[in-house]
Amino acid sequence: MKALVISGGGSKGAYAGGVAQYLIQEMGYDYDIFIGTSTGSLLVPHLAAGKIDKLYDIYTNVQQHNIFSVNPFILRKKGNREFVSIDFINTLWQFIKMKRTFGESKSLRRHIKKHFTIEEYNFIKTTKDDVVVTVSNLSKNRVEYKSIKDCSYEEFCDWIWISCNYIPFMSLVKKNGFEYADGGLGCVVPIREAILRGATEVDAIVLESESMEYNKVLGKNPFSLLINLFGHLSDQIERNDITIGKLAAKNRDVQLNLYYTPSKLTENALIFNKKLMTSWWQQGFDYAKEKLSQAKYNELRID
Image 1 (tube, helix red, strand yellow):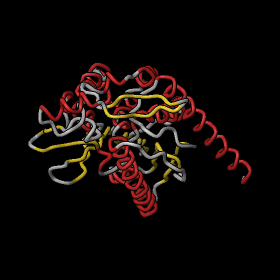
Image 2: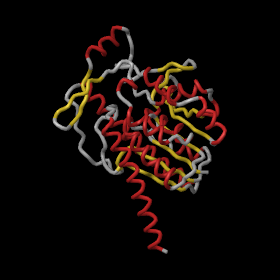
Image 3: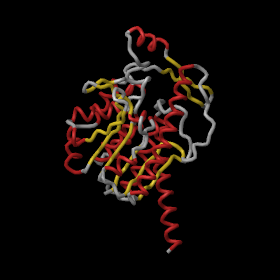
Image 4: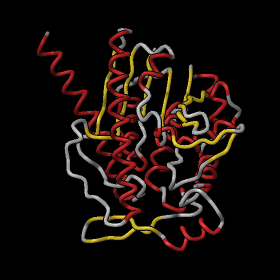
């Protein structure tokens, strides 16, 4: 049983889309299980439904207003570099309304339902073994995995949305009596979960460079510094997830193939830029092509 796992990574999900396109369309890989965290949760339903061209259009045209109903960011440019600073008016309004987050992402919930149809939902349920999204149950202090098999269409759209809610910048969601947020707060790369669900081969797309050896540009205000802090914590969780995934794969004799980004794509994955995301999609496609071509060449040399 073959599984595709896609990590969290915000706008860098465009890169994962390019990798997945090559694996599915060019290599002809047929996955039985799809598991995603955060932006990976947005990708996997469309990939499972075979809607790669549609997914490309969605990811390369998404804008801030498609994500945020209350946007806590102001995008600024200094030379060729884009960075974020706080939108004091929106943030102050959130405090006045006694909200617990700087922003709200209800636009993303509408965006998900607009582009992931009930017909696609029904098609997946009848043709794939499983499609799973990762969420963090903050009330119970645990990670949960929500399968399309256990959810109605509306429920599954909710869980996809919840998996992407990177608090405190996006919505904190109360569902079934518990408060939920981004799955990446507990598990960024759910390799082990794919293995526990029966995968005998796993392709995992990790939206970070393998070495992670680079100097971050730290924020010059408390708001952007907070973003850097959450990025640092996410990197540590990601490393642990990969280590645990490798051990699980070794113990169960599962073939694990990791696809990293060849370089650091962005300092802030909450910036959605059409030009950059189009470029990242192509980079992902080219990287997968090069990686698999090199692997095939090495096999021929050994033979």
